[in-house]
Amino acid sequence: MQFNRERIVQKSRGKIAVIGSGPAGLTVAGNLARKGFSVTIYEGQKDLGGVLMFGIPEYRLPKTVVRAEIEKIEELGVNFITNTMVGENGLTVDSLFTQGFDAIFMGTGTSVPIDMNDVKGARLRGVNQATYLLHQVNAFNEGAISARNVPIKAGERVGVIGGGNVAMDAARTAIRLGADVTIIYRRTDAEMPAIRAEYEEAMKEGVKFWWKSTATEFIEGRRGRLGSVRIHSEEGDRIEPFDRIFLAIGSRPSSRIVTTTDGIETDEKGYVKIVERPYGMTTRRGVFAGGDVVHRPQTVVLAMKAAQEVALGIEEYVNAVKLLEEIEQGSK
Picture 1 (cartoon, rainbow, N blue to C red):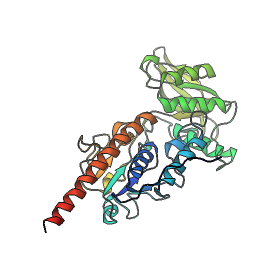
Picture 2: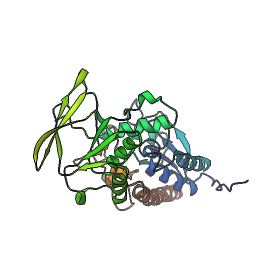
Picture 3: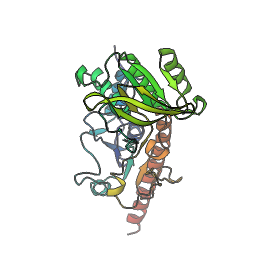
Picture 4: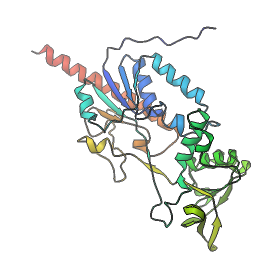
């Protein structure tokens, strides 16, 4: 059987650096490579794919699909540099420009999870981020770690705090591991930001929901581990036994790049500001951004859609710069 491969376009239109290999970064890289740009992706982890690879459960997104998409992009001539964190060890946006890149795209997402360290007991063993659970389970499925490194055992009482898509993913993953799972959410089901279909599937699979409830204290049990949680609801306070709690109350962008680069403005929460023309450019000339690092956490589909628009903005910008350079050279 023969598979039709995309024709590799000669890379003569400009040199683009993409920071991050998640959905936004891969989309920008693929779109620009198809149009004749030389693209290099810088990924801080050893594995490509970002949230696609380790942040979404296997039952929702098979990793064979992710690998196939990455291979397609690699076949377009895109270069991948892994284990390389932009913003550390002297590698900055400025140093990338000195290497000859015409434009740089930030597709770094929201990699810093929000904690509950202001709540008593939040640092107890047994209280972790939901993203940690998803990462470890995906790593186990990939054969990268052993079962003992998966942070849930069958029969454990697991609570997930939050009402977004990550909370649903964590809860449904925990159910599949044989846990007794409850989602603790401070608002009502009508106010929950998770995709409705995910919520309905979680209900069918046996996930319980406590609405208008908050965790006000994590209580130590045996050997310094979590034993129970004080829950506040409209009915008052109560203490409920839990073996593990996973936090899914949001995330924010890392400040690593913006603090090592002059001229990139963010809002008060660290999300990168962009302009409308050329679409996706930050307040620093030649630096673009898209996906969750701009628009706050959203679905993969929306991140990819925004990245497609930014790719057009990068193309427009580089074309304009090249044209001005030609005009200047012609006038000499």
